[in-house]
Length: 135
Image (tube, rainbow, N blue to C red; front, side, top):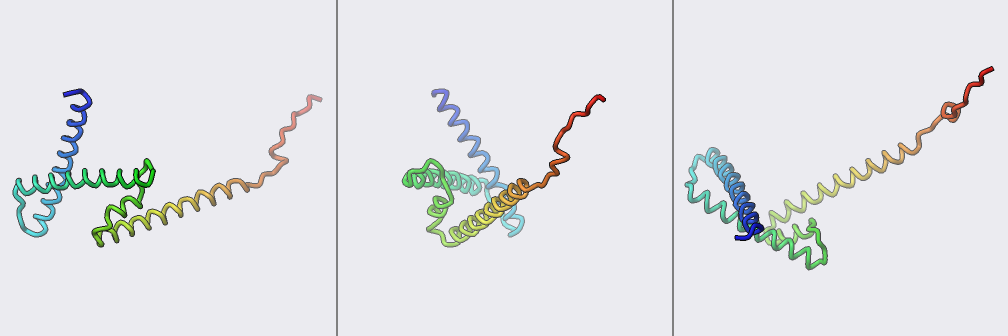
């Protein structure tokens, strides 16, 4: 196996392990809350399905951006991905709107800050340096 392939394989294995850990943690939370148990095989299956679905999502997002002749995936791509699930689409749209509103607020604050920073009045007498005479 080439060095690049080994690195890719290693990274993929680490990602799969991370997904498995998170899925296991979530299953444990549900098990505690609902008083049910998950078998190790069920957790492994959920982890594998989750990982494959994420790979599929990543490919789709890349294709959507490329189709729009962009190199950056944006919220429109994510919304397009979620279009088949009404509840997911609604949640993503809500989050997108909140992010946009927060971004607009931050821009307004920066704009106000830069405008107020430029209007600082100065006493020109204090800024002028006059050398003392040696009389």
